[in-house]
Length: 96
Image (cartoon, rainbow, N blue to C red; front, side, top):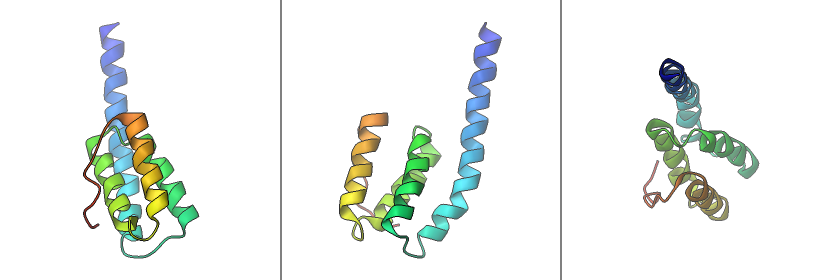
């Protein structure tokens, strides 16, 4: 049983690493241009699923910071969604 738990934990770590590798270039791209609010919401939905991982949370914050002044209502909703899903986090106010 302990081996199974360790194997599952390792697979979760690998999944988070793969997600980071996939989403990093997307985040870099969206931080140099402006997405529509719908496209931004889709990206944040996907990032939110992985935001329990510190590196993925960094990407989530980066996108939120970039778009806070552009789509403040949307970003506030996603900050609240993060808090409800993963816990309290208060440092979204910096630039991308």
